[in-house]
Length: 262
Image 1 (cartoon, helix red, strand yellow):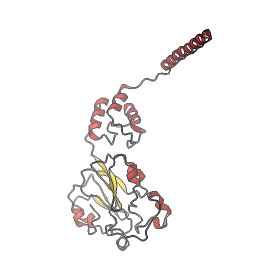
Image 2 (cartoon, rainbow, N blue to C red; image 1 turned 45 degrees about the horizontal axis):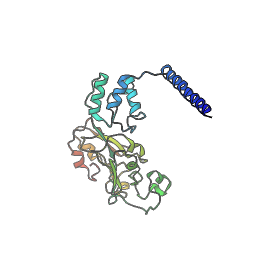
Image 3 (cartoon, rainbow, N blue to C red; image 1 turned 180 degrees about the vertical axis):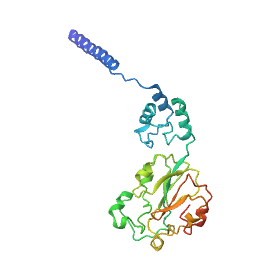
């Protein structure tokens, strides 16, 4: 009986040793060299794995940077500080990239927007495509207020306030997840230090807008005419700001009779 146990133990132990040796040999045979720069870049990346860079997490971005497929400042979360460290590792000069944050182009909160009926169904912005008129608000272009963007944000930087999503630009890391989550396409990245932003996305104009929302742009073009540097133009009845030209003078805001520029 004891001999059988000893033999079994020897066989199991021997098998383990053989498997260990084979695994070690296989590891050496199939070993893939890792660029030391990739490891160094990965160590300085923030590790949020948000995907805002367009790659599958920080590992994917580090690999792409090491291969020269992504820029040293490709991490939107890390910002200038991380970009400088990555640039040092890669031996690249990194310029001062303008900080960007998300902004919701809608000012039609519960007081300003007109409601056509009371909705009591599933609170999900994407579901509004299947309800009458696309939701309870008369305006079909505004924020639906059910917070799909809030759920998508990994940094707690966006919340629904009085029926409209509002971004806390101090918390925003410009990962773009809220942009992807908004079925109304109301969110875009704007410069952190810019003063005027267009808080309306309604493509109608004049009276049609006035019956829908007190904050809606009526396409009067006063903002366009009063901009001293030609930084704002109407496109499809919605003002568009060229932030490369904008000098933050605030004259477009002062001229807007509807306060659609905030």
